[in-house]
Image 1: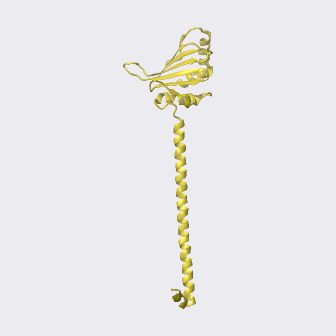
Image 2 (image 1 turned 30 degrees about the horizontal axis):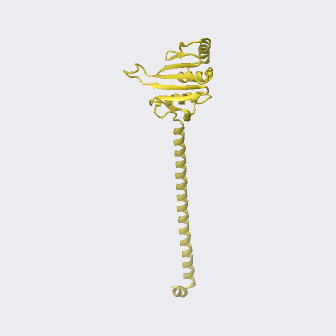
Image 3 (image 1 turned 180 degrees about the vertical axis):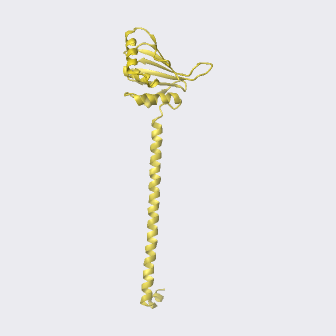
Length: 196
């Protein structure tokens, strides 16, 4: 083959060499283009995976109580308004799927979502039981945030009136917070019943 190339005229040799170079340039150009496309696809897939992971993490962050949507929503609302948050890792599942147990500052809390049924309840409600862990007055701000979680329109003035009444009593009292929320107890231990 080399002998045939030697026998060609100079014009044909230059033409063959330039054709070969052109062919190599074309091949290189297309392979570089394909590599760039492959890199772009990999970058796009990588970005999509990261976004999906971040979205999944965001969804997981919002789940406070997986076994009951009503209680999960309660914790979301509470944490959206409160300075002292309820840590989702501190929420324990009670002995039924709609019961949560948690501690905040000096209070131990039990919250139960009671569904409407002919056997146990004529109306659906949330029952919240709060006890002081150190025999001291339960944090006022925590109680206010609990009440605001159940009723966004609940004002500081209404709460102050309620808290003053509660602070003066030595024994358990019953207090109607509003048409949907009933309080029973004292400053160290109380129960809230919130109609849904």
